[in-house]
Picture 1: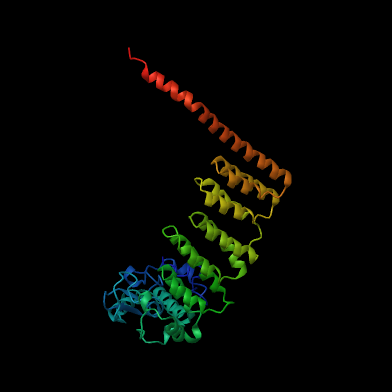
Picture 2: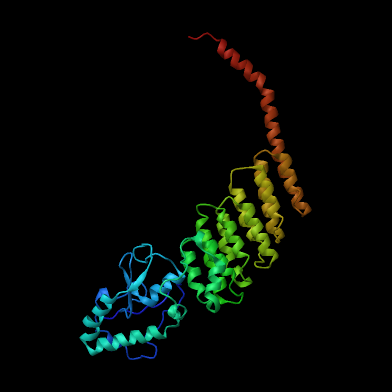
Length: 377
C-alpha cells in the first residue's frame, strides 16, 4: 500500500496535513496496491516516493529536494536522521535513475502515481518560499547564539509571518525560547498564531519550573503579552505552578495583577495561598503574611473564618500579644470580642499553669532532695 502523504513541516502539531491528491480525487482505491521500495521513500518529510531525490554529501542520507531545502532554510543545518552537520546537498542522480527504472517504468499504475505526487509537490504552496532559491542558504541557522532575528525577518520578507511559524515552533521544541519569543513578538497582534505560540512557551517554562522555580517569572513575562481571552485560559496554570513552589509572595502578586486587570474576579483564590501558609510549620512571619492575604478576601464570612484560624494558630504557639493583634482584624464586634476572650483564656491558662509550676517547684525540690538523702537498702 502506498504510504499516506505528508509534505512540509513536521513541527506544528496543529498544522493540517497537505492534501497531495487535491484535484486528483481518484487516487485512493487504485493506489492501495502500489508498493514503493523503502529506499525510494523520503521517510522523514513527505513519506512518499521521491520525485527529485537529493542527498547530503556529509552522510549520504537522501530526501525530497524541496523538503530538505526548506529544512536548511528555516530549521537546521544538521541531518534530520543522523544529526551530521550539512555542508552541501546534491542531486542523487543514481537514486533518481533507479526510481525511474525500478518503480516508475514497472507499470502504468506506478507511473500515474508518480506523476500525481510530482504534480502535488509542484502545487504545494508550503514550498513556494524555497522553490526558486539556491540549494544551500547563504547563512544557515545553527545554535541559539548564532540566530539573528532581524536578519531572518529581512530574509523572509513578504512571506513573514507565514514562513516564520514553523521556525518558531521548531525553536520552542529545541528549547530556544528566547529566540522564539523575539520572533513571535514581530508577528502582527491580530495573527492567530501569536497567542498560540506564546501559550506553548508558557507551558515550556512551567515544565522547566519543576527544576528551577525562577522560570515562572519568565512564564509570567510572556503571559503579560497575551490577549485577555488567552490570559484567562493560562492564568490557572501559572497560578497553580506558583502554589507548588515556595514563591507564595509571587503567587499573590500575580493574582493581584489578574484581579486588577479583571482577568479573574473571584478573590477566593487568595484562600489557596492562606491554606498553604496555615499548613506550614509555625512561623510568625508567615502568619502575618497570611493575615495580609486574608484582608483581600471579598467575602466577609470567609475572611473572618481565616482570621480566626490564623489567630488560633498564633495563640496555640503561645504568641499571645500577636494573637490579640490578629483578632483585632475581625470587623464584627461580637466576633472580635469572642476571639479576644478565647485568646485571653488561653493566655491565662498558660500563665496560671506556669505560676503553679513555679509555686510547687520548692516543694518538689525538697522532696527530691529527701529522696536522694535516704540510705539505699
